[in-house]
Image 1: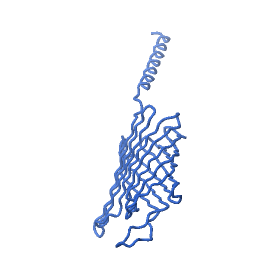
Image 2: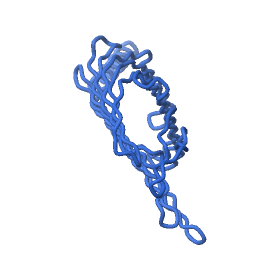
Image 3: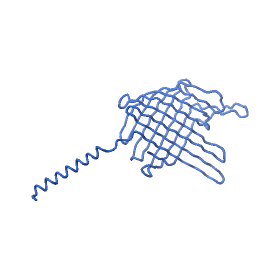
Image 4: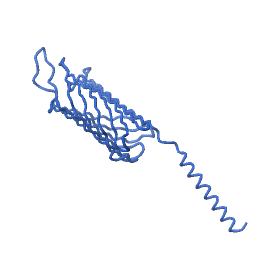
Length: 258
């Protein structure tokens, strides 16, 4: 066989392999429209002091053609020597509609129970706009502005409180890899009915992978209430001291993603 024929065959083989590789890339499975993550942490001690703290967290999102539905939940319960010393339950729902590629309109609703902080129940409904400033494979940054209604009931108080509030929130996420990331969220809730009763919530999380599905998660949650309620009456005597404004929660546990 002549040298020229061998060269032609080699070139044809190379071209065929290249076309096959391009075809395989084109047929890769599309990105999944949903995302799920759940995390669990447990701390327990025995002996002179019996302490047990359990924390659960979960989030889910699904992207339709022009809609995105997001949901998250968290629960914390702690006891020390048989006495409850920590209790927190939280649920959030949000639906975003794409106005443009970066601008969305949203509806949201959330509920919170945090009795150690004096909060029997808190319901917040909101509507507003969100803007995606950064949306890449590694970095995502979104800000939202809106208005809403806030209903709260407090420990030791039979009456509930309803307020007209605003909402300003931001969410940033940086992916070090597919399974490792840093996430920071913050929400400021100004109160237009009672100006000094504003709220601030911030969440920080770092996840390091153990496998494709499991990772170690370290998180820190801050709840700040600038006008906390009064402590409940003692033996029928009204108290003049208020609950603390600041609540911080550090958790370390295992996260599962799918």
